[in-house]
Image (cartoon, rainbow, N blue to C red; front, side, top):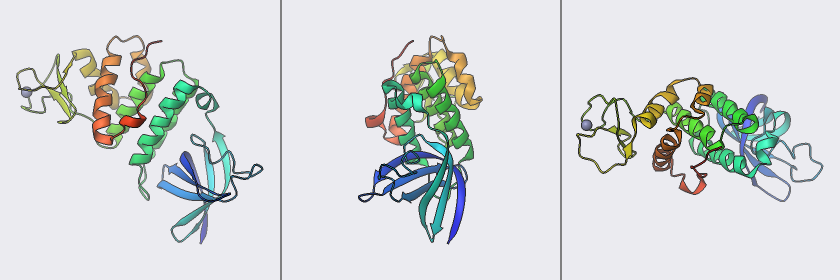
Length: 242
Ligand SMILES: [Zn+2]
């Protein structure tokens, strides 16, 4: 039996019994933590807000063997703006689904946690199109899970690529125009976004504002994420301009 206080982000909640909920936390040091929040469905419970998706803060847990109970939460951010804007909420909810599918218990994911908080800040307070923030989040999310596509060379013949080509989500990268393929074409500008964005600091995606090729990059990358993560039914709309 022990008590611990961890920084975390709420990924989801589920009704557990008449008054209790099960909350899924994303902890940078512990990965996925499922905890029971007792009494949180009673209107005056101090845990009412602590179990809402997107809530981040310091969570006090009581651990008994492998079961966790949520005792208290010091909320640091609830991302109110994104929760009350339908378009942003659809995008943010998709991110939480991606995280819910990827985060494992007892598996630290500190870089992904920090990236997620940065992305949520952009989605909540920023002015850029939610679809652009989602593309940046998807690219960093996949790269941090070791799933970045190969975009600097042909995945069939290995030859270096420095121009227009094809993008084959199934093979996981670019295919040169000399190799046989039915994969869709991708312009060099979009290819370079897929190649470079996951390798730069997260906030650098704001430089793509006004870049003509980011919607194409987002479209190709979404097909790749859908294939790898089976997220079709949660994926938000792609085409979006200001
Ligand atoms: Zn080739």
